[in-house]
Image 1: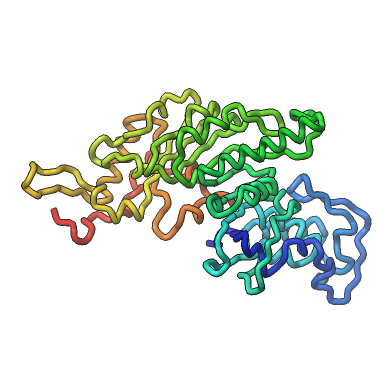
Image 2: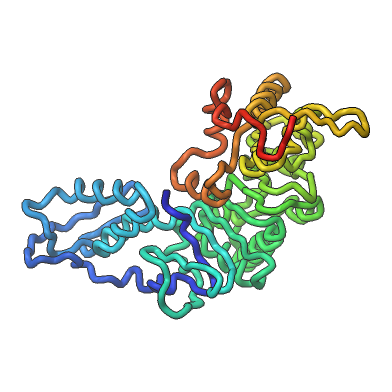
Length: 406
């Protein structure tokens, strides 16, 4: 599995300056043959990308040459397979790079951390050159559809606003709850700009469709009620409300606060909550959900995610019955038995409630997010797939954890 495409702001793609991306020579791979292509304009699967005559090399190292349409399809399919594949295709030629960039930059992880503490990844290799403070260029940010940012508390609001502005077409946004205020500030900036220039709404000719495609949000930290009040009624540049656009919400951390902003998300259809953070014992009060969640009129799916590592390494989750005070006897069930019982009770409670293991051992939350953003199974698809599967969770241990006695 390829690692997430990570930007560390203090060393942004130091090994290959992003501003140099469009400038590579168009005849990379030339071996001396000079077939000339007729004037033409070809369109890739990205309908916004038109390739003209000047985008193609004057020579191709193919004998005999393939039709250009087939060659484009081969390279674009290769670029879609994985991030390393997309990076390789992007270095073939200038026109091949245009095919690869939407795949290469589809999902992006942005972190504000010291260079000395991280391994910096570029589009092609790990960084080995001095740091660069170049922000994400707009011509690359336009391709980002999934953005994970963790720099709140370590960066200024200005740097946070820059990364959001650079990715106007983002569809899935993963961020800490405090970054919601940064989104508010960016939307206010666009709103002020549009009022000054007399532009508003979908038909106003606005060339900055900031957040108009946003549908899914992943909260990386717990959230509090006040963090949502200032977003109520906030409109994005196309005139719609920001919160009204969100249909999918996943919360990764609810240990400090169990607040869920479902009341502010009128079009919410999918909600994912970290089950082990809700304070419910697996065998007592199985489905302790935040108040009002199941009463949401448009909600179609509630996914209770169970962190596999946390679940297996904390025996408290497997307590079935406490003994009388002072006896010291506690009966435990196995992880497999407890999980299957939770799944069963969830199905009996409400047809919309699903239980899945996420993240799995060996996979972090950001790895899981990145894989889904690049075309893998999302937690919603996994939940739908394993619904009614009697074998799901049977790979969990059937014995007590070390040190736990019956």
